Length: 286
Image 1 (spheres, rainbow, N blue to C red):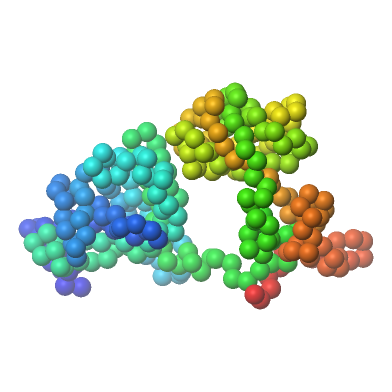
Image 2: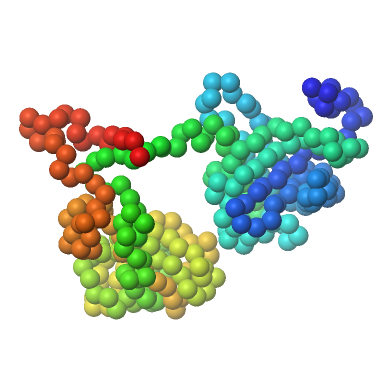
């Protein structure tokens, strides 16, 4: 490749650039050069000390991943932006550019953002190759339990009809709070559901509920699956949504929605003399 031939020369001025293209919002450009670069109309910011790890391509179509690590910067990317941007499945390209001729580029990696990590003053972005798309399930699976999410289009229930207002009354630890929720239902009703904060630094963020315990009328203990982006504070207001264990019993008794149940509880097997493979999820054409 002519570009690589030029890059091998000791006097060639080569820099690494990274462009992240989100579903909504303008592209984000980063470079390891000590000043900003403008390539094809996009400004690639130098502050933050961006450092992509080694990039390898594999011929056997197995997953190839790399990582982008950088410092938070008041001028380019802040911690709050990383938290609030929706970077899931955002497109990302890592390429080399000749600073003497910014039209000359060479692509090192072209893929998607996977995991996003935050640690102290650093953030990290996992870059997953395009072959990762081949691992996505095509079609549906059938099993006794429902295979769709509560409040999805196939479920047909509307979340607004089930959300309950609440407020945090005490902080137990980083993932457990006591909350005032006037809707007095049995323990576990909100397990598998979520909370969405409506006030405070976490306003607009949601987190899934791991455990739900009714302590007394109007008071519950909610354990979350993970920490919220910012510390929870007594007095924060939130909306609380129920969960679903995907069983036909819960679908009927709790939500009265068996007509839209997406499982196959009556497929033969699982009992003595039945199909020995019936307990396994199986793929069917969509």
